[in-house]
Image (cartoon, rainbow, N blue to C red):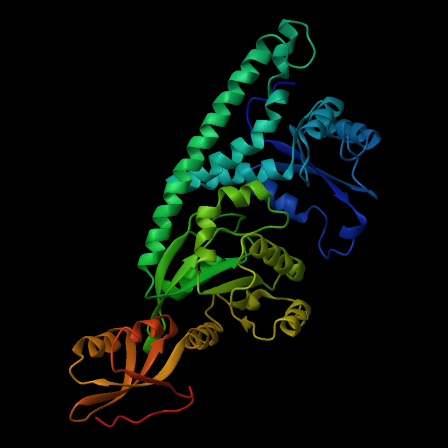
Length: 435
């Protein structure tokens, strides 16, 4: 069977899933998410097969007998591709293709196809290409088996063998080149983030299609592309979010997460996910209108764990309350995450409460100080006015007294000035202006 491209676009797809003992607690249909992924990739779903197993088969994933049944069903439905809801090894895909005589695509390949069609910026395209090559590399052999007939050998002897070795060298070289380009982008992004050091940074994370981009637009008028499909956003966008009298923060949208997100995809998209790792606060958007909202929340937390963000401060945003038919998921999530905020990014409901929650988190980073220093130290006075909120000031003959709210990152800078006295006040104390 000749495999020359990784794509499921405009094809008729038969979906195949496996339910293991650990999966039987799920609230949604086993192939509901895979069907959404297939439609996002512009495939037409013509049938579904679910196999209950105690464990996966090493040769054909679903077992030889079931594989033959799937092949017969694929022929009767005129399916062009069989999409499996799991990550299959190259051998499992090869064996399934031989038994079913139909192209087989696994979950990772399907997600990569969607990412390839949605990539817009240079960075996203590089990341997608890297992920595709790293996925394709161990599968190159089966993509060249159609050339073995020229020499009559087994596997990829003859022209296929030579072409395979050439391809492997080219792919290796391209992978190294892409990684270097992405390292350069990552270094540039880190410099950009460092330049925002004076600002409080908020990152939006969540399951794909949870409403992150809609929330971004509602809070900042960012004009981010919004579509009712999975992985509509691949590129990070950062905008200023005005918190009124509490100043501004920088708000960044990120690529959506998904259950069993392929590890190599996370590795390839580290430059994009950097916005989450460098944020001071994360907004975890949860679509509470879904019956599997709890499972999606757990999937997001697993990805955050993998990229090193699990210990960050997180405000959970219970989104889409305007279309929620069953309150059960919201009640359960509220019990588990009592500090969550219920909103509708589409209608604006609850956004004031979300703003208040972010303001409260931001204020945790500030200290109320009483600062006494020589009146001749104009440099320190200018620093406090530029970087803090001076709430009271009194000038004596030789010294100046100030009450100031200052971000804790600046506290070490105060020690650089001689003859300064600093007292940390109770945050509840409200000093009066004595100027």
